[in-house]
Amino acid sequence: MLNVGKIEEGFVLDHIPAGKSMSIYYHLGLDKLDCTVAIIKNAKSNVMGKKDIIKVECDINTLDMDVLAVIDHTITVNVIKDAVIVEKKQLTLPLEITGIMKCHNPRCITSIEQELPHIFYLADADRELYRCRYCDEKNTERF
Image (cartoon, rainbow, N blue to C red):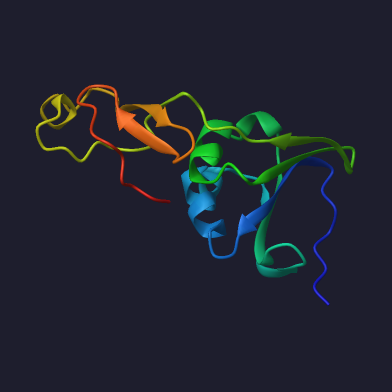
């Protein structure tokens, strides 16, 4: 039996599709934080079959909800204070994101003016489709 201890203050990312935890770990910059991180891969789940879980013991404000929502907005964020879940956050797709994805259109202004931030807007929420703010190229990047 695997035993991962309680955390006093932090967050637990639950309902991560199996195999996506390492991508989330790096995109959220958890590798750069000086805090305790536990990654559980391929845990049994009645609903999903298999899932990943990430436990992080640090301030909840270090978590970029927009990055997490773009990766997978079905993930549940459990906020922990004094070793108790005080809030369950459901993620929603942000209307606009900056610096998470890059435009791959060679004619886009971001290819020439490399200091420009890559900005994408939510063009179709049902299909989770983002488009470049500058050239309207659709994003094909998957996390």
